[in-house]
Image 1 (tube, rainbow, N blue to C red):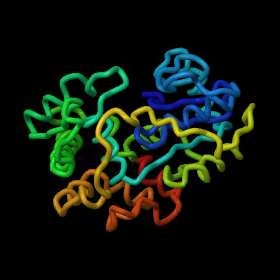
Image 2 (spheres, one colour; image 1 turned 90 degrees about the vertical axis):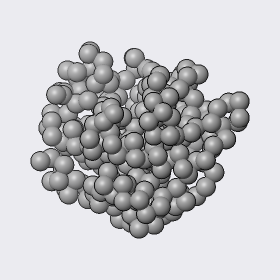
Image 3 (cartoon, helix red, strand yellow; image 1 turned 135 degrees about the horizontal axis):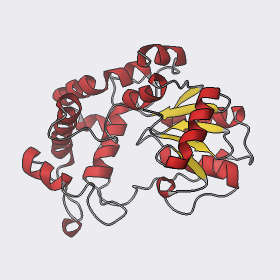
Length: 272
């Protein structure tokens, strides 16, 4: 199985388990900069050199060796499940991708046909009923995760605990898991623990949000998207994410975690 979704600096100072929609573009750029003293020119997900990634065959041995030795600081980053699924919807379903097309080709037309979702178009300035369409998307996301129909769950809306667990189950161990909502504080702890080539001022690092500006902007506060049924579905899908990563299920508008992540608890529960 190995270590899918793992990135590592070439200097082997940091090992990161990518969790989609949790500041992964910014984290990847910080890792790249910590080795090379510059940011990667483009989307860090497209980088094929300058950083080890499990998706690259030549990176398998270095990553495997470094994970087993556990000398590099090993970390990941999580995000409020309410905000994360909303971000997935506006980026991947309602948004136009970097290539100028809809995400995954025929996925959006399929959702329009099967679930009655409307996502607007450039012609009408992406105007549509965001709340109604999001709630229908949520039903689709639940179907993919619980029943694997009409397709396998997508990495952008499958549970964070599932991504994070693969690393533990295959023999890895995290030193730190921090919240996107207190990004600089969490990333600073990682950098302080890592033996990096280049020192960084996190206050000066831009946010590399590759999906920004390609479709509709969220028009309402978070809680307005989630009625009783939606919250029931969210709990069904993301119960472990709320409990393990200490987010407030009762108040969708409270994006901040209510406690620090208990690393030992995460390893005990996800390592089974």
